[in-house]
Image 1 (tube, rainbow, N blue to C red):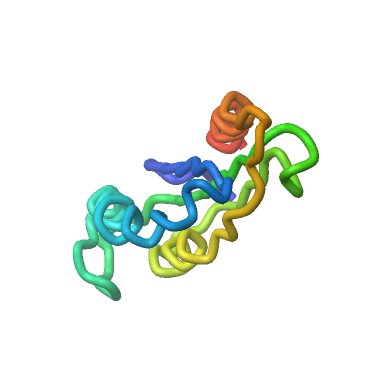
Image 2 (image 1 turned 90 degrees about the vertical axis):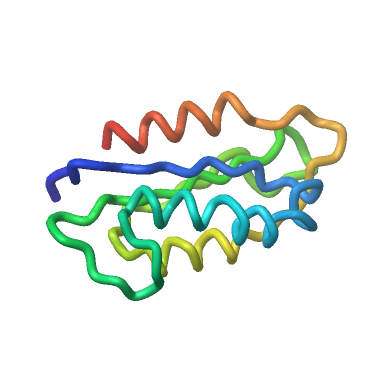
Length: 114
């Protein structure tokens, strides 16, 4: 599959500390950014031309308090599917270890080159 003209990777810290705030963050900020990037302000609105590709990277912490350090999705051009991925993130772990922020950002860069 050829890369789209525009690609957006959203990187999210998936620790339990962010969980209580995530639905508000998605509704008030992330969804608006994604829809604006995709030139689609209304759900179900059709795009003209090639739609951009969207991907998700979720990173946790190092150590025993998280099930994984970094997890990534594939590419999608379906805005509503992508938003459901964002809403479906399971926030857990954290503890006293450092977040895998560098690994998450590195994975986001790798996704852009794939």
